[in-house]
Length: 507
Image 1 (cartoon, rainbow, N blue to C red):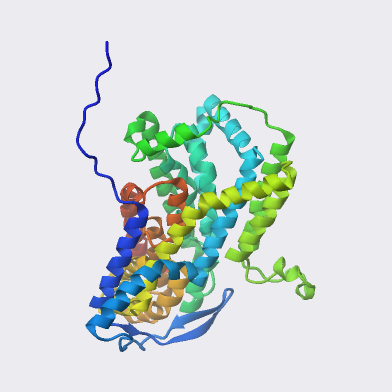
Image 2 (image 1 turned 180 degrees about the vertical axis):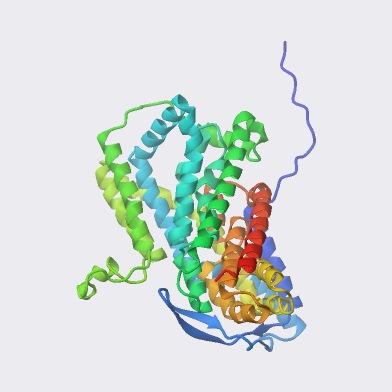
């Protein structure tokens, strides 16, 4: 019998590309600069215990300012110009330039790692072991998500999750899940830990220092919150993974994953050998992650006077590594892995450049996303939004005020997705406001960290999220629809946590 001809259903609707969505938000930000009158707070530098100097706003100093460009015609020309300059300025922003360099160099290092064959060999063994033991397969998602959540909770793991997409998406596809599951294991895991961190120097540490709260106090309450947050996020991903495995077409990225599977080499085929070189490469990579944790963690000098020895101050004491130091660490790791993996210098260099090329679109997305903030900052719009949100909190009860702070911090996170940046911007206002409305400053810090953390999983202004999605080749709108139910549950959990914190006088 002849095969049936395909039935034409007319032209299909194609969702806009992520780049177009971000550029649309840039246009919306430009419109806001015409609607919201400009204003600004005065700023000063504050020494925060354990994390160094931060520029913070001065409460009560908000005042309207004159527009730098006046006249409808001149403003219109300036707005058009800034809209098209915003993506370029986003690349040039010092905070984002570091992240872009980090992503490109990390991509090069992971390409070297892949060229050694150790990743494929390790994934192949994992898949075969999971096929032999359903119990092991069921344990993989919770095990890795808890590990990544600990990274977010303890040392603020965020950008570091981007390259792990290169490992977990292929692993998820090989196990019969989808790329949403593969991207969520490292990213949602670390984001859940970041939002409910009990010991994160870049959010909790900065916020408590600015609020005048004892550094890392109240950790017990946050630890309980971390358990619930991580458990909910893990259960959500496991539920989705099980559903997709039972019925693959139910995955929102089913069609995209068909292409990815067609392009990939099956992990259960080919050479199944796991050589001594593979073992050495993977063990070195695993141990390097422990070194990374130690490197990014703020620490005091452990040997009196050793910091005076030339070069050793990078390794002993100090405030810990950040983006540039981490990127340099991974670059050096790439050299070591190339030697352990038996790659020639030319092969290693070629693999490095292939990795850079593969992550170039991710770097572009990150730069364009920063353009949203460029437009808002150019229009002096962020401070008026912050002032309006803070002013709206006055006159409410303590529990409602804490919840309102949570809502305000959630809204501000769209405009300022940097954790330490949002702390420096909002806590100088929220801390004294908490005193006025009967909320403990510790509770105000809790409202900040959840408001900053939960929506990092969905806001398109987050460089980390856009980097993860670009690397996983998942459209932002598809991800947003998928993650929205989890956002609702986590937001509800945040409200309950703040109600309990207000009732028990969390301090």
